[in-house]
Length: 325
Figure (tube, rainbow, N blue to C red):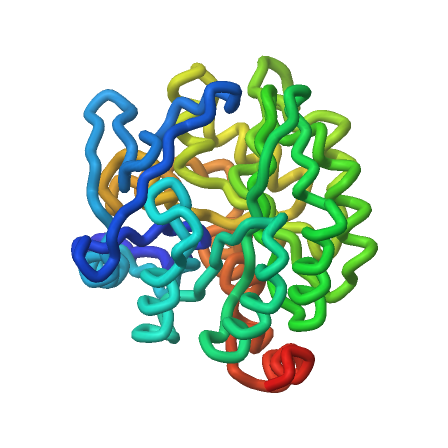
């Protein structure tokens, strides 16, 4: 008799609608100076990587079925910027239609003066789980939008509501150069949980740390900084020849299982949803059962859902009041 499937929570799912009339796609082209990223295809709803690349379009309806089949009880629906840019309609409609399943993380322009008020309104009207900001990159690889004066106004809104700031800050060689700014922001906004996508994509190399070096160690032990381990990390390990289970073991040893969470990256990475779940389970064989439960389910749900942060309650009303609602 086979063992029951473990319970999972998906912290990183890029929903993409089949209906292109109601939700028209507006694909972006990758900037010429953008850092190389093996998994995924820009402006398309899936990846074309791996030995047998598969591109499944994660429309909300099949996604709900896949989640049931794999015992995934919730997912963070992260806006797919390379397909929809800053039109978050499908993410918001999906989370509104299935509020107990999908937690919405929208993507907005950090330098747009209208972003803070828009976030306030969406906290009130849609019960956001969090915000992901983007902006321009300087020639040296730095991203001033992360903590620019305009971006800080959006950080203030997220802090007021006690929500998640979900960050992808990838420069050439990984996200290490942004770590000092992340630490400063974590101290400045004490009611914000910061979730860092794809382990900040460390530049993998041989040795016991696998690229999670002294810079990453600066983030260890911070109670409000969390990390996603996703199919992008698994792809990097596979394609660059590093043991995914040992990389995950290093991350959990460094940050704790209560600060590391699984994310499928469906909609960007290649593969069926079943494959993504199984790859994560296989990569977790060096974790204890308690660590597995945390990484597969409990940490993601606690960071994005459990505290009542998605509910249209006290925190959302505070933010709405500031917007003049």
